[in-house]
Image (cartoon, rainbow, N blue to C red; front, top):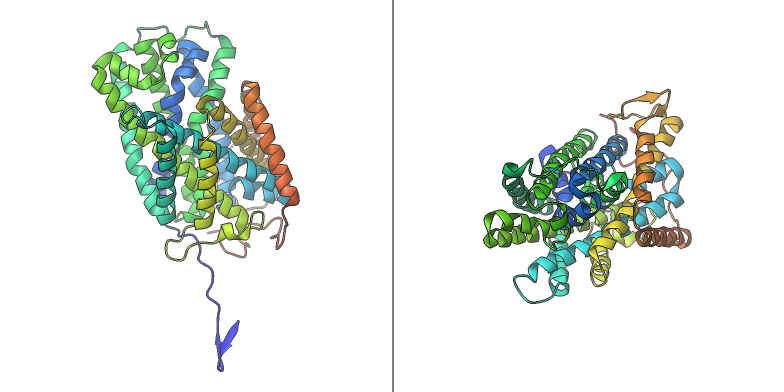
Length: 454
């Protein structure tokens, strides 16, 4: 405290994130994160692995998303903090493993952002002969500018783009409906190996539901909004993905679909002519940019949460007073994503990003199990159903599913993922841990009041 004359003056408290997102905005934002470049770019390669049963691959990936989403929903209702994966792991196991997990998740999201921005550049270069790199860097710069300007502006930009990309997927479904039944959708020639390999790849298309939890400090009532938004987002996107996959293989067949560089554009062109392919390419531009924007926003929120608790440089926790956004965290994430954009390969990078995200999934499920035993009286407005005593069963199923998914990733992706874990462990080891908050703080007793029970 400082004084001026005899009148004490209280230091101005630091700016905090603005709580402004309701259920609709959070859900549509979540759908926008999930409905992105994955379905537009990867459905062809997934069809090459799973054949006409690629739609089953999407359902398997959706099952893992739902199982893990339940864990995120419970943890977000108990600890509505921007740090999400990091915060939950810290509460259960302490700062060091949480720092490893948080660093890996941030890296995975930024790898994905860099790769998807190259997808944007690829679509852009079909209209302007510029190559993919320059448009990719432009997309990242524009996304960073919107993210800095404000969370509401970023989410409403995403909502507008989500309706555009959703319309493209609805168009594919409408095109495919008359062709339903033209191919054997239960053709088992790819076998279970092909189906699970396809599921491990298309899990990239579901990445994003967990990032809804990173918006917990910016929702009107995180304890009710975040769990419902998580589950609604997964349900909507699962239905859309399965129908799109069925439509695509019904029109082109798995072999033609797998050999296409622009699979959904080719589906439209096959039925409606070349002009439809251009329309889908434009929609894909909006879709890929939307994914880049939301990956950048959510990665920066996780970086902000880690910095706010002392596990990343304190500068990353600074919130710009006018815009109420973590500007330095956004800019740092933007620079890292730009670096990955210069070296990204979308297929390999997608699986590498999946490995990083799987680490976060496993950490959240393990944290839920540990806290059910360590803090049985913790107020949990949302609870994962089915348990034996204190042991929740669905997180165990989620962990088994994660193991299956990792086993079906290509070796190179696993090695890249392991390298990220090693880097995260090294960073967590050498970074100074000053001002560490309490290891656990039951709901209702958080000093900042963000987790108070209603």
